[in-house]
Amino acid sequence: MLKQIDHIGIVVSNLSEALKNYERLFRVKPKYTETLDALSLRIAFVPVGEVMLELLEPLTPGKGRIAEFLEKHGEGLHHIAYRVDNLEALLAEMKRGGVRLRDEKPRPGSHGSKIAFIDQEETGHVLTELVEKHGEP
Picture 1: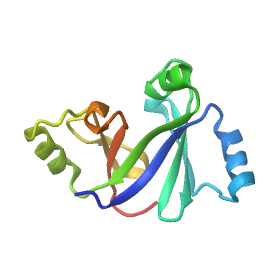
Picture 2: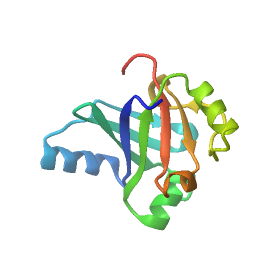
Picture 3: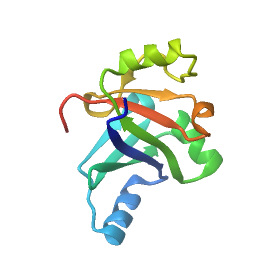
Picture 4: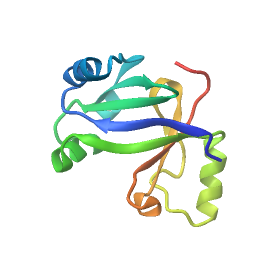
């Protein structure tokens, strides 16, 4: 079911400053950055071995879940994402099994991926994302 950890999501208030800090501390650079206007987010993916760190910066204060998270909790760990095959079938199977889902159908993610979140009550309050990718960015 789960193939591997895909990425770890970390909310930041300033993506440019966070990237400078990660480069200074760990000598890592982003593989790519992207602006998701529909979600009012700017993101960067930083490779660490086979796992990515996804740094998420809200573009508009108070707009969207990431902005709300930042206002309520400040910067920090937001979610863990697992790579899966056939996300739509997995979500249907989970729903049939009574799993509470934040997303019952896949939605577009970064770089053409499909994503869905599980209700964090199901995972001990760890926000969990499922990611289906076709090819690597």
